[in-house]
Image (cartoon, one colour):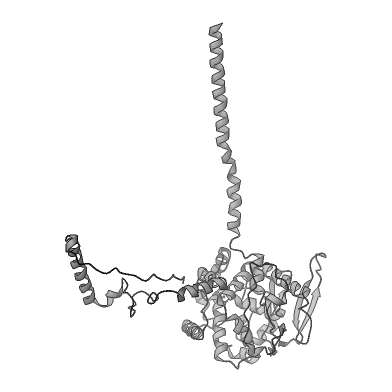
Length: 441
């Protein structure tokens, strides 16, 4: 009886150990079911290249109340930021050029026609020239998210309308159009020039004209134009109307995410750049972007293919070998007048588009650096220490420095009591390093 009891106890212990091992394995195996979490975490990365609703409203706030034909032209032109920079420089160099006559003056320039049309409005180019990175961001957004961009414009217009700041007057005609497909959809607000061939560029403070701003973390951009064009300083100013004739040839196809081209108007005005009459939808022309990088992978892949064989089409487009020199001269002129050249990389564009507080902080930090801490490599500054490359231009000085170093090493091998007592060396702290836009298919 005692023997059977022992065997029973042993069997019970073995069963308990087996069940405990199985439970442990089950417990250990549970984390393997967490794989979907990694999949979910990867989703934000897939959309990280897209602009959010807040970002779109923030960047489009300064231009959302422009009349439709002008706004369409600005969005097309913003996909060629380098050309916009050239147009800004040209406009500053020709302060009296405006309207249709100005556009005809730049007909021989190799800029995209959408950019050429903007020289009719020097007050507009004065705004666009204040932040080339903003222009590039608008163009990138319109190429990658045209529907979202047009939704943002309508959202901002409804906000200004609700605040009582968007009405018809002598300069513009504001109409509300109900959706023909979705009865419950918000009405589309259309802004047209009161006179078809005379266009006014409205000037306003986005922080005021839209009423209460919905995104405190994303305040609207604001680039006030020179007061010369808008005397009086009203809440919504229009300044002087520009007679544009046939210089504006695009308009929005609301609800379809694209821009319609008035082909007859375009061909009559751009006699040296005719387009097919059957092509009534705007498409981005990658060859006119002049190497400015696209922001997202989809745009790089889509428009990168258009560049295959583009060099063979340069002559057909009327470009010449002096294009690079003309662009460099225009950018140098722009820099000399206080404007930055267009961003040449996505990182540079993001850096430039940072908040004004961060930029101010960097400037203050730069002002607080010790004397002699600024400057580049190989620069021998008066009163400052030499850098590692300063001897490359003076071999004899380098040999003298090497001999002095050799003597110093010998001195260090002598007893401490025999070494001369030197003065402590103080090095100034280094300052912070800085990091370094046609047709859509």
